[in-house]
Amino acid sequence: PLCILASLANPSGYKLWFYPFETLHSKMMQTFILEWKTPDFHYWNYKPFLFSMVLGAVAFMASRRRRNIAEMVLYAGAMAAGLLSRRHIPFFAVVALPIISRSVVDVFAGSRLEGCLDGSALSGKTGLRRRIFHIFLALIFVVVAIVWTRHEIRGNEAAISRRYPVEAVKFIKEKGLAEKHGFNEYVWGGYLIWADLPVFIDGRADMYGDRFFRDYLSIRDLKRDWNSTRAIFKRFDVTYALVPIRAPFAIFLRLNKQ
Image 1 (tube, rainbow, N blue to C red):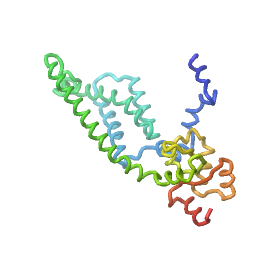
Image 2 (tube, rainbow, N blue to C red):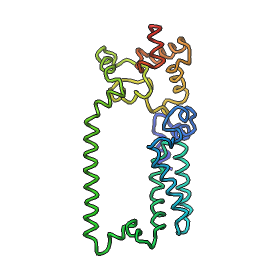
Image 3 (tube, one colour):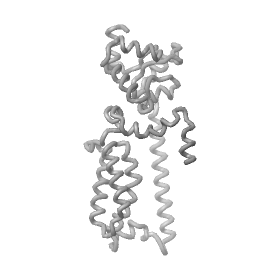
Image 4 (tube, rainbow, N blue to C red):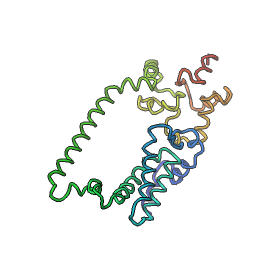
């Protein structure tokens, strides 16, 4: 009870309690935000999720251990969450993989593979061998992590330049517009915050609310008249627009010299 009362000490007060439910039931989020959409198994990065679900189902059917209702409910709930929204797949991994692992070990109980799966093959008199094996695995992990990190850092600047308006941000700062408010592309919001520029919107769409997000999309996609758009820009003191050069809104501004 004290923790619940303490949570009221925030700028939004009691409204914070309803925030998770509003986000989960937001039609705008589920329709337009990629991470809230269902996973598309035609892409390779969702194949591990599919493989895990199939492996779990097969292991449950083949396991001779008595079914644990709590584990089944956790597995089914996490799987349903992952199928509804791809952002919940990590939650499935945390909850379901230990359950799947226990079931797989039970499937091979009494076989030669059991010792390899549950670690008993490296226990007992082979304590030294087990420690050497664990050290070897840890070293492999460290080396791979270092090599991968150095490779990613080396190409970091080039990757940022390909995805974000680096030169445009430099221009804005050189022209003294860094303190002004602008209308920006949704996916660029996080980069602009990182570059210390005020944003119209960023990736935290749930914090802006469905109504604001709907207004933003209607402006970006030219679904409202110019007078209405200008009224919104005046309301938020928008001085410039920073959008992709081939975006409908950018083309409209160039053609109409706005």
